[in-house]
Length: 261
Image 1 (cartoon, rainbow, N blue to C red):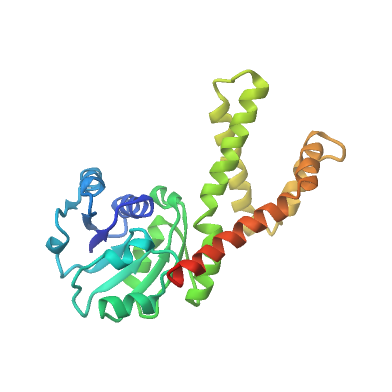
Image 2 (image 1 turned 90 degrees about the horizontal axis):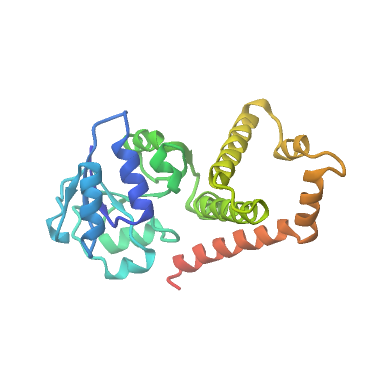
């Protein structure tokens, strides 16, 4: 399959590396960015093709990935063939907007997250047309979740798309305080990473076992014990509502982008 990328930011790179490592089919990739630098670097790292000028992008590729910032859509210009198929990772940008702009009828949306580059992504996909060749490829990037509508995709984006950043922020805070309390342990980063990795595996196992996330938490917590005291602080500071506010703000921003705000 031949795929062209317009934009090579974090999401574009995650997809490109994931596609490169796919064992399901042979992938040939083409990369373009206005600044040229990231496209050239990504082409070298993935063994793909660097496109220096936007109009040099082949017009007969199987799929085109839009992976630039949504705010740059108005500035972007490329003449797609009427039969072109677009995979958009532009948050808050509806299919109807892209169909009207590019005068084509085959636009699908994907909201990946950065673990996709390791084959461990949680990827949300919606397509109004049959796209089995793309879904087959996307399954190699991790778990693919087929959405029933764009509305559903936009709502869940705050959790799967933004989620890794929130988890990384928790990891940063863990490491910061571990170092502060231990006098700067040289193994701090590894300890935190392994703690998150092992916990994530227990979360994954709970899907088949039927164990709830709450039960997993209770299995670590003894009444009046060490973990109990830590959780009490989080409860007193209303962590639940703090995170709820974060997810609400992310979803609100998704809808604002859809309105062009």
